[in-house]
Image (cartoon, rainbow over all chains, first blue to last red; front, side, top):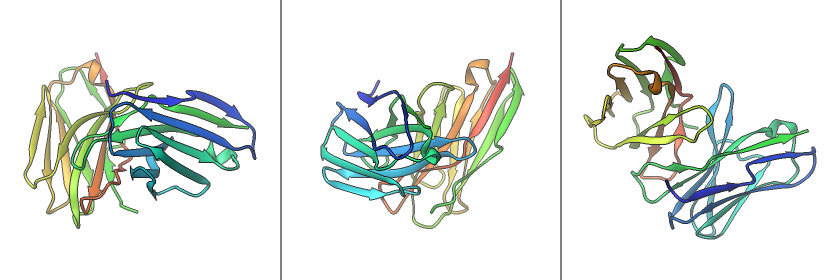
Length: 112
Length: 112
């Protein structure tokens, strides 16, 4: 199994609070991704990174920010959580173009 | 936003049946097409990555074909087994880029 871990695995938070999800990899892969999974929408890309300090927006980036200060960590921050951000969040890593991605176990976030 | 579509959305087959489903994508600027298998309560796992028109890949009873000119890929499962029950996702990358854009998935249920 690829060395990729997400933390926390579950979180309940209140509307308006900041939340940070962490994705940690031990594979030294260049590319890292954050997706959210919602019924009827499959996996939608939030943000991705192609190197330290190199990030770009995905399809559903509004309300989210990311940071990658080290190769192994990719942080997803909800500055002010809203109920519409209740979802399951998946991190994925990829070594190079043309290769399949490895996914983390997911983080279930509930915003109440 | 890239439009990656999968059909059907769900499929029920009997054990032993062979089945196939489709991933359609815009053919311009194609770089790679990925297939993933996603079991309930687990993370997506990469099956195939295909880059060349006419590519065919095979893994056990599962195979995939790619037509980049007309923008589609087929995934075939020969002699379906209950353990094949999962959601099958395709994902597209374009322009040798880094984004992985997923389709909505096909949920396969194989009855014993």
